[in-house]
Image (cartoon, rainbow, N blue to C red):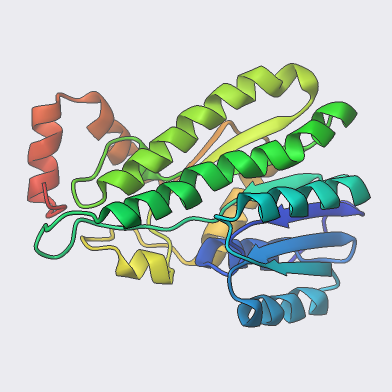
Length: 258
């Protein structure tokens, strides 16, 4: 919890999850204003206490991020009150095909895309006009290493994160001339309730605090793609470029349900 530039305002959606919670703690310092979103007010309250103890000013908002009208209203009101310097579109969920490969339920698929994709796009739309008008600001989109190659146990999750990766890459090049920075974060396995509920092996599992420090450091350097940890990043990238029959064989051997 080191110091950051004074009067920096940071928005984090999904702040009650593993990485979101750790990011809030990481950025909490005197001079920081944190606008934290989550579904559970009790968790937000505990997080706010921790962050205020580190010297940050904290505001919380508890609502279902699938309510796009409420999301856009919250972000619009915040943008009108103060410059939003750094926005983490971090909220996300996961589903899988089930222990017996019975398949994903359509209602769950719709919910996942509402959270992982539509809410992310709405978050960008909610803050981008003000950032472009003042020609400054930074938006961080949370993708996943699963964006490189679809995993048989989590096809919809993989698809949603691939969409975020491609969307962020396009945004970055489009907005560079406007002074707005875009970064795509592609984590591997980071300890959280969502991570533990995901089936399959979890190599190179990281602590949320580790991930938050790494993300903060590379966001400050405005890296286009922040993908980690290195061994898993390299492996996932290789799966995306080798012949599909070979990548399928590797995934079967690694017990990812292919």
